Amino acid sequence: MSIFYFIAFLSILFAVLVISAKNPVHSILYLVLTFFTFTIQYILLNAQFLAIVNFIVYMGAILVLFLYTLMLINLNKDSEPVKSNIIKIAAVLGGGSLLVVIVACLKQVGISQPVLLKDPGLGLVKNLGKVLFNEFLLPFEVSSLLLLSAMVGAVLLATKDPKTT
Amino acid sequence: MESLFKTVQSVPLNHYILLSAIIFSIGVMGVLLRRNAIIIFMSIELMLNSVNLLLTAFSVYRGDAAGQVFVFFIIALAAAEVAVGLAIIVMVYRNTNSVDINVLNRLKW
Image 1 (spheres, rainbow over the protein chains, first blue to last red):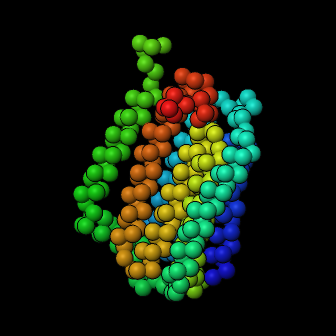
Image 2 (tube, each protein chain N blue to C red):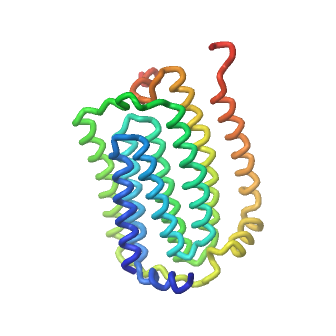
């Protein structure tokens, strides 16, 4: 039980560091740590397939994509200009009031039962595969189309236009 | 693996909702606070991840595998979104020599 709170504390800490780090590279490295704490949460929930997918896709693919883009974009020169203090305070107030609203709604719900695993094989690949390829076959195919169009769009956007340059 | 799960069994569902709400709010703050477009994208990733965790917790709570399949779809969508978004950021950098979003204010008025 206490391991959940420890990991939750770590993920909140690293998430705050992600948005407060001055150097974008440090920010990305803190994001890796945040995703790693999420992977541990999935393992604690016995969602093993999601833990592996989170590890590979988020910590592998997406973070490498971020780092490569940061390398292409040379931000070494004194990076971003800071926002004024009023805008910073307004941003923190806005996010904080969103949190307050959600927590207040949660107070209304009141009772909360502990999360119990009814079926031990719920998050395993065997069970998830059966659900994915029976009930969710059409969304699965549509998501493959989405990935294909995203790939084509990314290549189209990132290549230089020979006429303008 | 199952003995590992036994340790977490007494965590109330409310605490999962609270954790996800806090991470989501941190993501919103990051979007409002920063001007670097890449860090704004990273904040959006934080928000998507908090929703993923909450969906998984509810899926385990209800004993229904559909929630975890949704998380799988969200991960695929996030990968597509990051690929297109970072391509757009590279193009913006090529045209304006900066990734500061305040440079891109022509759509503002």
